[in-house]
Image 1 (tube, rainbow, N blue to C red):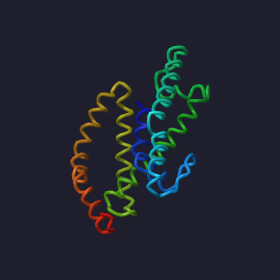
Image 2: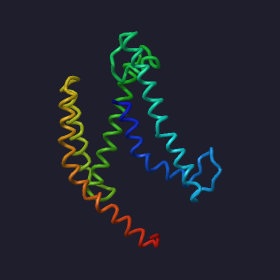
Image 3: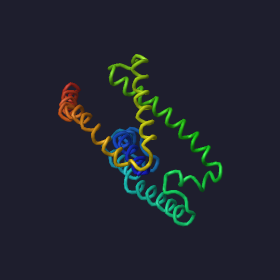
Image 4: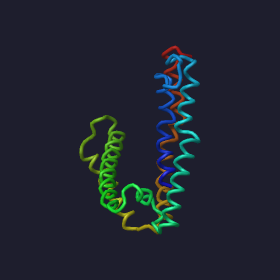
Amino acid sequence: MVMCTLLAGGGVFFAAGEPIYHLVVTPPAFETEAGTAAAVAPALAQSFMHWGFLAWAVLGSLTAIVLAYAHYNQGKPLQPRTLLYPVFGGWMAAAILLLTTIFVATTGDSMSYSIAVVGAGHDEPHFLIRAFWGGAMATMAGILLYMGEGQIGVLQQFIVITAIPVSVIILPSLWAGPQAAMAMAREQKLV
């Protein structure tokens, strides 16, 4: 689940960004002129190679093999940290704890800033708004840690319940987005 989320999160961002990048900057394996109609196919080919079947097959099968071997042959827990036993060995616990703490802190900080920017409508939100969202995420993380491993069903229900209001907020952009794009294309005389 963690590996699929990793690929899906990367795919959501890079699914749009990487083809555009490769259209503007020709990939090394191709010799087309950047920014031309001839550069479209190489840009998409390079993006499909990075985010298509190859990425899922390599990451999915490799992690499945390592997890299966470590769990069934060595008695390790069937958890993502097991993937790091071959790399870190005995001092893995301290390294993982440190890396996870750093990752969670920086991710929480970035998320609280992003949420505060969206809420404030500009790139310098008041520090109390950012602190509120950071505190809300920390509280939620604490609740989830307190609930323990056996409560994945409750977590899934929570995600579905919180996604409903977000969906209602996002739905208008499905209508307004294409209209805004068409208006911009008319202004630039592309259509």
